[in-house]
Amino acid sequence: MTEALTVVTVLYRSAPMLAETLPTWARSAAGLPVRFVFADNWPEDGCAKVIADCLDEDRYTYLPEPANPGFAAGCNRAVAAAGTSHVLLLNPDVWLRDDSLTRIRAAIAAAPADPIAVGLAMRGGEYTGIEVHPISLFNDRPAGTRRRPIGPSGGGAVFPTAVFEEFGGFHEHLFAWGEDADLAYRLYAAGRRTRPLDLALRHAGGHSVEGDGKLLGFRAFLLARNRILVAARTFSWPLALLAIPFIALAHCALAARRARQGLLRPFLRGVARGLWESPAARREWRGERFGIASLTGYLRTGRAS
Image (cartoon, rainbow, N blue to C red; front, top):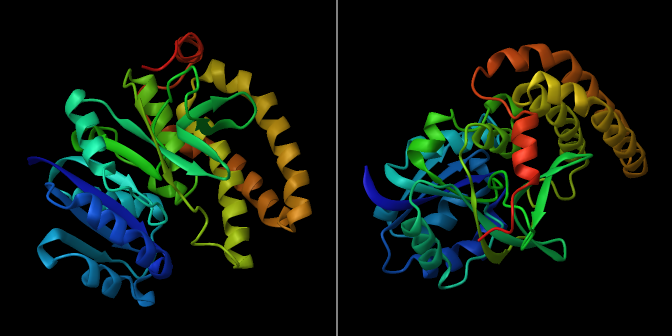
């Protein structure tokens, strides 16, 4: 395994977006020991050609997967193919500036053993990694927040490859939306701390489901189910019992929002599925769990440096 960086990207209906963002990645990687691995979960839309037109053949690996195993599985497969000491998980709807990869590599060199949350600019704000939230359990962490992130967001994350593999990567059953929080809680519980890098990279967000009612429903289902499963898998029993009223409150509030969006039925199916699958989900993870001591330590954390 060489001391270099691989950009890992999962694609799904991403060709138009990638045609905009990939040239910025190529410029940012110019002259640097950076490779690319693309796991394409929708290879029929032409991403292969976009990549071939932008990158030299020896600079990237392309992994088509027509069955679409999900974002989590795509990331795991791409990381396994990276062959470098570090990977940068980067969504295809993120633009890089010319110096972005240079700054990311400098952050890696400063503390090679640490995961790094890469800052993204989206929804009118700037966010870096994932934070613990009293109602929703996990949320995008505003850049510059007093407390460090519990872990990186899957849209912009640097992992030492060995650390990612040690923790089993993303839990593939979650499919998408919440798999990064699941890993973040497990990393934090085991004492792995994430450093923020507030780059504020432009991130469009939602390109893979935009304008498709069926996919929006699927996302509502997964978000509802996965929030419950993340708590069941990663929280200690005392913290899980403490969190139950907060989870219930969050899902009541979300139910009203989903009803206004016309997504109440898939949301309720997700809640029911999450409750049904919780016992099995808890048995699947046998490592350290995020407990009251972890939460107390997180709340006492000072300003990230």
